[in-house]
Length: 611
Ligand code: AGP
Image (tube, rainbow, N blue to C red; front, side, top):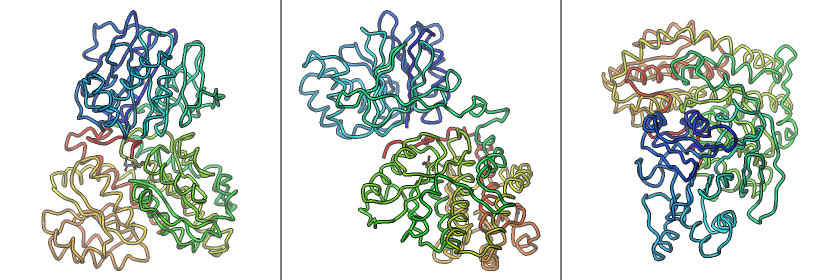
């Protein structure tokens, strides 16, 4: 999932593009490149980070008021200088950058090869670019017309920016499936995959829709559909501050975002949950409350960490609302030809709101009559625009590739929705409802207490950083938290780790246990606690190293554990927002101890915008 930046206006384009690429580097960091027009087309690109590109451009001709820039997450063609974007057409006239995948590129490439076209890279992007040039040459039309025709012939996802050396006043852009935001300034326009490269220049933005082409000049922005009909740009105001996308004195965005959670969970509850009055106000959900209450089932659709939030929500919704819940991996749901019944409610959970698997899965379900509710963090994202309604998690921009604050905010929103529906449905009694409202409102302060264990967890990381494998175990609400802990460790430290329902261990994984295997138990006090203590004994009996996340006052688990992290007492329904924090910090500090770039883990990208 690449990062795309473009600029046209009165400033020098290169510094704007370079800064923008650095802001988008969490989307992909295999290579970077820039193309500028200034008395001809200048294209520079390099394998590696944006800083490596910046390095080779010191002293080079980088002036010009129009330019496009790209930071890559490799899909077609390995990370290398020649596969880096921008790509240049055979004639040398056009340069293009692309985020997405052209699925039928091989067939088009064969057609072009037969016509004598040559290729310098292995990418689908260079094929599309030369296809556009071929159409332009054969039809003697404009570049825009050639692009429109080409886009009708390709399949896949794309956000592309295209410039022509003979027209230094225009950037042509197009999107389908991959995000594109255009920032409107005075005599200038900014183009990017998300708002983070734009917010310091303007708060006025246009989110480009699927199948739209944008003709962008310093003083003009024209939107058209593939039918060549003009579309009215819908300008929205960004509610994001520059500080939110800076590190704020922390070494890494991941650590900053972990420590932001008392505030971000509070921001999520603020203006919605009034625990004293026992009211939950969620206008985006209220309008579908009847359908949710009487839904034959609720299907949570998501990927990665968001899928884990869906799994916690399954326990909560079934317990409180007594509505059957299924939790689906979006990528499997999409192609499994699922049975969608009228009235089924889909809850799409996504931090970025751009994850292609989730987006395509809910589009499929929507076509079959399901109601789509989004639980999303990025305002104006593609999933938000496909959903019928929903609730934002208000966690602020999440820059660290490993999702942390978005997860706890997702749990806070999903818990509020479940409580609201259960209360309206009278599925739980008043007393339980009010207790849970207070428990939820108490979470931000309790998370702040858990974060005080930071130094203790740093020591634990030092102790276990050389382990080859980890096992994470939990029961009930803590099972998905165990999965999340294992995912965080894998993402950040590249140590193999598995999350498992603690009881399931006896059916196989226990064979892995010996004195070299750290086993992390998410064992906060709940209805299953007695059971998980027995599981701890089973691990200890095989000399496994037990690290337990336990509730203050738990006198049994410490005796069975090599190391413990204590969290404040909390109802089992909200405890996952506490017990996950030590697991986020453990992964962070093990990654640091191993010398890895925890904000940009290898092979990963923040939002996966291709299937
Ligand atoms: C989590 O740390 C990962 N970044 C990844 O698993 C992520 O949760 C997944 O790609 C889903 O992203 P989304 O929430 O933006 O849809």
